[in-house]
Image (cartoon, rainbow, N blue to C red; front, side, top):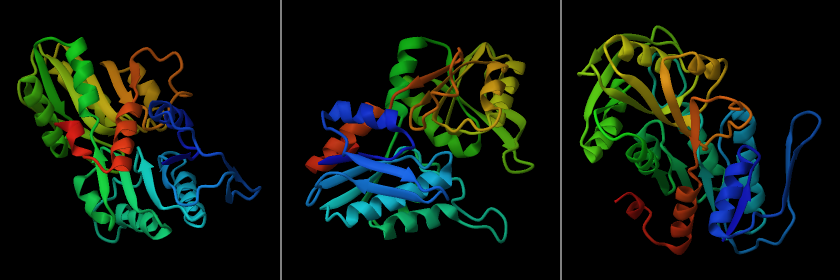
Length: 309
């Protein structure tokens, strides 16, 4: 087994490498002056099973292209098989046609990765479960919930209500609430345009409750900030947020710093180290051990689903 890292999240790759006690492949990934990506593998990897670790986060197009070129370079190096480890799978929010004459980019990107030569996909908290079916190769979708549940058990003891920020997140909120024997509530919202949201109502009792919002992605932060405001206005004691992928684009960090959110917890599927300096109400939990263990199990042909039993 060999590990190759792209440039999108080297810190996470190094943590996975340390967990597995397996050095990263010596490689050279750079850009020509016109922006074209160049990759060179500096060691013999013929006949090895290679796991390439690369989130398709911002800059999404560059990181996606880098992933595709890395896969091609590995394939031409005569490796045994290639597993694309994509902690954050970008373009996943366009998983269906919401209005006429739009693309289903999640399917397009899955085709690109498959046709480039990947033999397997390992990812974390896909935006929509059906995206697994967009790939014509085996796809393992890991869940951050075990990491979040451990942290919640450690920090919150009673009077908790899990909150889904929209109807689509009810399943995840209910699963975590069931495990911790807590109530759930739902934010009824509408989207007047892309990246914009309005809270219409809060379904469920949140008065005097410690509300924990659960979601997979926080991008501009508007939805979560509005949801926290609505919960406080309806009597919630305090609002905490647990989200897997911290996209945190634009002024998201500033919005969260000034919001009614007491604490936002994200994972390191996306490298936000430069954005979060001196930010007190945003905490990062590492997903490296979970990914490392899944990589080990795939390499040993043992069960990945047992991680979540």
